[in-house]
Image (cartoon, rainbow, N blue to C red; front, side, top):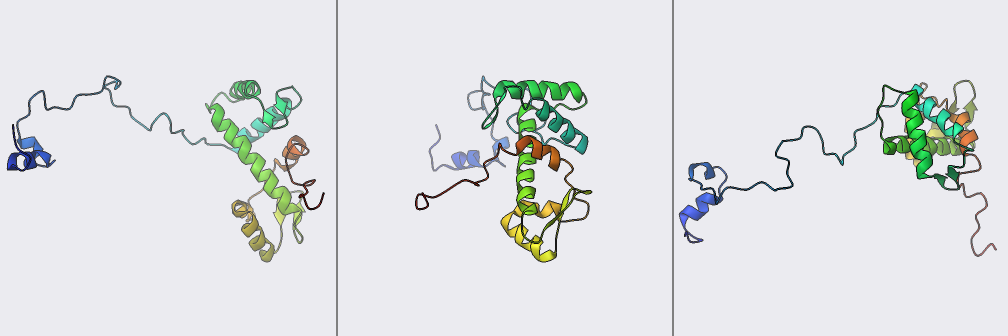
Length: 190
């Protein structure tokens, strides 16, 4: 047995010098029985990979959302789990070359919904105009500065190439189903 203050104990604690000290089977670190033994390459299974969306895939998703709009799978707060499972299955049937998970498709639907709400509110701002041909908000730089304060994520639409061709289709899908605060009142107003 080696004492705590002995040089041999202190050398054993050093990772550089540990390789020079003879080890026995009792001092070697044992692997956990839960470990498979084989090293996994790539990232953790809990970390989801980023989905690579293109305009065609976005359009396909919106078309599927339209088909399931009146199917009974949609409630006041969105689609139920069974509806999502069927929509994901249909998405994979139509787009065989991609393998997105259910959560990746749900995330994309949420992103499209946020972009729609943001552009709808920006379209209603004083001084902004909506270009129907290009499906984009246009306005002077001062308007864009105000919009970026209100909506920090609107920066991606502040250039001549950033169109949102799904605006009308998403309007048909979400108008009347989104909480917009139109009829809200405080207890002092009632």
